Length: 364
Image: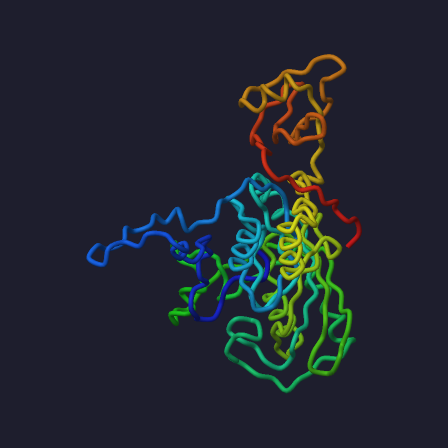
């Protein structure tokens, strides 16, 4: 994860999603090729479902056991869309908020990845593992078990800007290779500590003496697995992640999530004309919730979409500088930089096709 979610244990690679249908059989009554003549090969294009222009965000409630790549592939197949990507990996062990961008929404992924994340996680005391979670190999054990007072006493050490060493099994690159690939090959991975921001860390429950549940709100680059490992070491009891759920990413929270099963059912209803897939998609600009919006005329919008700068004067001139998203008649046109009334387009959007109409649910 850009946070706590890189692939770890050896295993078969996730299969690539395809849009290939099974080959069609000969139609009834159709002429068959002569027995001494090999049937002509059908082009691969005949086996592919048509792909569509689909634009918006799916906030998937990812189930445990599914990789983030598999989740994106499943969504891409359901919507038969041309482009899709996610905003921050989740481990197979983790569940919860996986924002998936479709179509033109992929241009706004960096704004989501830079947002704060909220995690709820369970730490198992008494064992440290090489992956820092339950999927790894036990490398050290302890009979010590912390009480609530001890845990609450160390929490302040892990809030604010802290120095954190990422897990050995992480997606960080070392000399061009992923750390988890080197670790799988038995190499010792020496990762440098780096600063991360923990805005909030709370002990929320202690189901028994061997486990504790926490909630953390953190910034980009934080590894929750490292957090669990370091707290266990500080308490002298060792520890690793037993369960992990991401509850929010930026503007996307629990109320916006939808499961793969719910999406599949909605797609079936849409195919039968009983629903619209637009109702499952949040608009592209949802990812730009923290950026000012600037409305322009149709003439200026046309210039921006051609990549040309626009100069606004008088009452129409924006009084601020920086990044804005530009709209015309409520529709997203471009991401742009504003300086002294000049609007310079940086990313231009073409929202022809299916566009999301679902509303963001405020409150996580």
